[in-house]
Image (cartoon, rainbow, N blue to C red; front, side):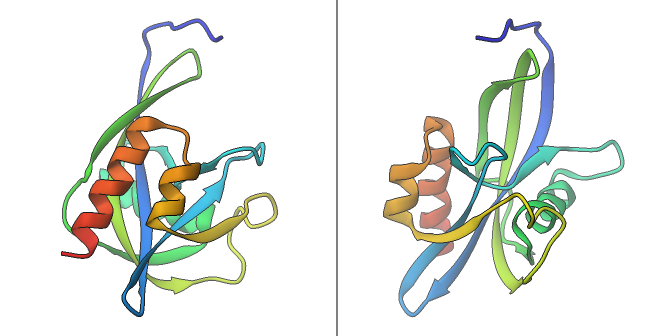
Length: 139
């Protein structure tokens, strides 16, 4: 286990979604080690708003473009870089899915039902936000 240095890293994430008929689908990506399903996320740069960072990460890591719908659905945390990453999460309505994207050589993406996404995501805080996002996307 990494030692916790007390550093806090501000990140943003997108929960990309689309409606197929009457069904909501959530887009998840594989982390770099290809072991876990996650959402696109990354550090908020000094020149970015949290929303801009979420849009950028969705493009770079998942190859999708779209519109942030509503404000933040909440935050979750995980350990990395000897500290804690605090992730501000936004709902992203996907409008364009690209065939290739900056990280397409080493990231897989896949659409899931909400139920399956909730089963395969291992971070409890992120699962809670996916459930909240699904409610918001369909209301």
